Image (cartoon, rainbow, N blue to C red; front, side, top):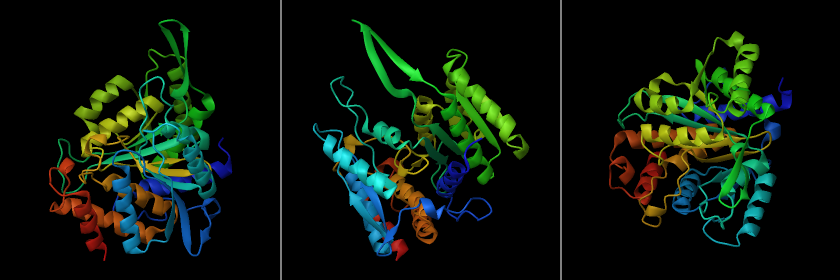
Length: 380
C-alpha cells in the first residue's frame, strides 16, 4: 500500500486539480483539505512562487496572470526566471529555476521550447518533472459554457504518468543507421499513478477509470502497466463502486473524437498522455483554454494542459491567456486561497460565455491585453 504521507499529499493535490474544472468551489466532503505542512511558508503574508514564463507566447500570458493577481491583491510574490529552450548556454539559469522550485515547492510555468535537432538539449519540461519527481500530470478537458464545439458535454480528466515510459530519454545508436530507444516501465510507478487516478475519481465523484495501453503489442511494458492498474482497481478500490475498463490507445484516439462523453477519468503512460491531452484540448476549444498541473510528493508545478509554445503568434498580442489563468487558479487552490481562485476562475468562464471579448483562437478579434483588461474589470 502507498505510504500515509504520500497519500495525504496526493489527496491534497487532487483537490486543487479537481476544483479548477468547475466554477463553484469544491465542497469539503469532496476533497481533502490542503496539507499545511507541505505548503511553502508565507513571508510578509505572501506565498513565494517560482514563475517560468516559457518560450513563444509565455511571457505575454504570464504577464496577464501577474496583472490579474496584482489587481486582485492576491498574496503571491514571484521569483521569475526567464528560462528559454531557444537559446544555448541557458543551463545555469535553468538550474537556478530548479533551485527556486525546490525552495518554494510551488511553481507556475509556460511551455519551454525543445529543439528537434540531435545536437540540441534534452527537454527542460521533462527534466523538471523527472528531477522533482512530479509524477502525475492532470489535464481536465471540459466543455466551456457559451462556447459550442462539435461535441457537447465533454468532461473528462487525463491522468498521465510523467516520469518514465518513452520519455526516459534513454537512446543510443548501436550501429550506424540503427537506433535503440528504451521505454522504461516499473511496477512502482504504475502503482502510484493508478492510485492517484482512483483517488482523483473518489474525491470528485467520478464513476469510471479507463486505463489506456498498447499491451496487445508491448506485452511486457504496457502489460505491466495494464495489469498493475487492474490489480489496484480490484484490490484497493473495488469497494468504491468505481468502474474500471481498459482500452487500446489507437482505439482510444478514435473514441475520443467520435464519442468523448464516454470518458470520465483516464490513466495512461507518458506518451499516450500527451497525445490524448492534445486531442482532448482540441475537443473543447484548443490549447488556449485547457489548464493543467503536475504533482509529486513535495512539489507542484502548474502549466497549460496542452504543451504548445505558440511561436507563430509570439509577440503579436493575440494569445489566449485562459489556459495559464486557469492553471494559476489551480495553484491558488493548492495554496488554500479558495476565494481568490473562485473569483478569477468564475470571471474567466463568464467572460468566455458572454462572448464579447474573445481571442482569435475562439473566433474573435480581441487581443491578449483586451482579454486581461476585461477580466480585471469583472473582478473589481
